[in-house]
Amino acid sequence: MAPDALIATGPAPSAPPAVAPPPGHPRFPLIDSLRAIAALCVVVAHTAVFAGFSTHAWTTALWTGLTVGVPIFFVISGFLLYRPFLATQLLGAPGTAVRTYAWRRTLRIVPAYWLALTLLGWWAHLQGVFTHDWWRYYLFLQVYSHRTLYGGILPAWTLCVEVTFYALLPVFAAVMVRLAARTGRAGRRERIRLELAVLGALAVASLVLRTIDLAGPRTVLDNTLLENFDWFALGMGLAAVSVAAHDGGPGAAVARRLARWGPACWAAAVALYVLVARLFPFAAVKVHGIFFQTAWGGLAVHVAFGLSAALLVAPAVFVRPGSAPARVLRWRVLAWLGLVSYGIYLWHDPLLGKLLQHGAYSWWRGHPFLVLTAATFLAAVVAAALSYYAFERPILSFKNISLSRPAGRAARARRAVR
Image (cartoon, rainbow, N blue to C red):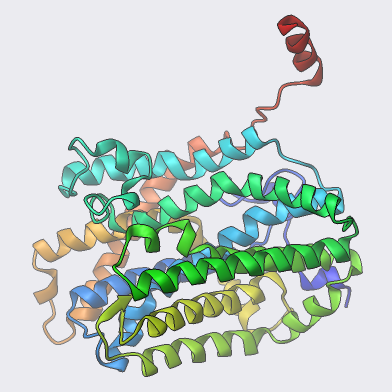
């Protein structure tokens, strides 16, 4: 089997605008379903908390700890957004101007978020949205103050981290080009090794900051890119391996192994997650929905969650046809839910609060958690679908408009300045 056959790409022109890659770059369709899985994990984690599940018992920590959906989203972002930069630099794929990249990211994230924040702020009376701190919520700055950290749409703290990553990614890519030129690592193999070394060093630095934060007085930094970059780095590392494997390149052997071990990757991800819930249920430090006895425990779960996420994402990038991960991720329902997963993520928590206000917890006293989860998920899917088809999709149709100035116009502009 050719190495590229192991990389789960699909034709980009047929992709819906929400998940379409930059022009000239491959699409990874199986990742759509992973978005749905990540969103469902977060929904279940939040309903478990409101259903009164204790994080001190490992059996219920299995549910409250499903905030593992967050690192899944971050690993996906690291992979999908960084791969085009590397493919342009190392494979000669079409480049995307920074302004066009920023335009695409803005259309994907901002309009849907502003719509949800405004409507839910009014209907669900979200804390802080219509106060003097309104600008913090609309500009993705609420995570930088304890006063606003728990206001607005609570899960949107992750968007603040994502937006920071979006802003810094072109800078990182440019720095890596210069670093590779200065160190004489222009070849694909040498460049990929440099990429992995730098990403590893930055991930370790991020973990060191998190350890210091957990060991001392808690700050807001644990909700920023500084202490969560290691999760993005895992996705960026997968992007590096994917580019290295193109056309039988130096990463082809790794791609073949990851494709062959797809089911084992998923099994390891589940086993690692269960181990976290089993070993760290009794403590006083809360991290990602689970309590831990020491700062080292909190660090361990953060690392384990990141590794679990990477192990889940890898089989969606390097696929062996007919494998269990491939069959699951090709389910059409999952793929469609992945298409509207951004809306599910934005709407579910405020909708959960409204359901609780209307007595959803007592609708079925025998199994309130199941009822609460089902009601929240269905309400969020309806809201997300309406948001996507009536609002997001028309806006996203402008994603591929190039904002780069033609060379002639740019030259004329430079002459005019002189």
